[in-house]
Image (cartoon, rainbow, N blue to C red):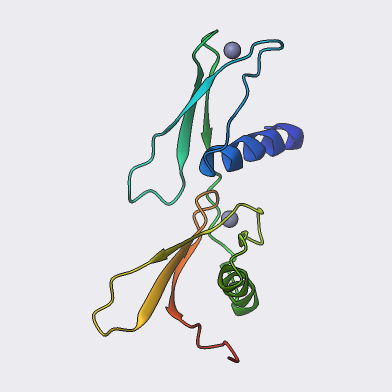
Amino acid sequence: MRPSEQQQTHRLFVRALQHEAISCEHAGCPGPVETVDQSQTRDRVKTFDLRCERCGWHTSLTGQEQLTPPWDNAALELMADEHLMHQQPVCPFDETPVVFISMPNPRRKAKYRVACFYCGRHIVMDWPPPESKR
Ligand SMILES: [Zn+2]
Ligand SMILES: [Zn+2]
């Protein structure tokens, strides 16, 4: 895949991930394009199927799994800060919005799973993060 194509795929992937409307790639076709999340719950990298209901244009989008190097503490703190500020944190490696999922916890301590569904990096962090100065 050429870098420009990869960029285009990533742009569509982020729109699909955020449930934004996607326009048909056929010039002049008004769509609508239906987006279906094909991923299983345990998939680290998501796959979306796009299909234009009008002209039948069809494509599928998959993230590019890349697990190393892992997120470092600085990256995690930044993402946690943005989450606290109700902003949308993004993965520092591919700028995909990351997801914070709160987890059931046996000892009443807050835990979050942070996941990037494009590169598949994920981590479980205690909340607030131990590195946090607050
Ligand atoms: Zn179309
Ligand atoms: Zn990522």
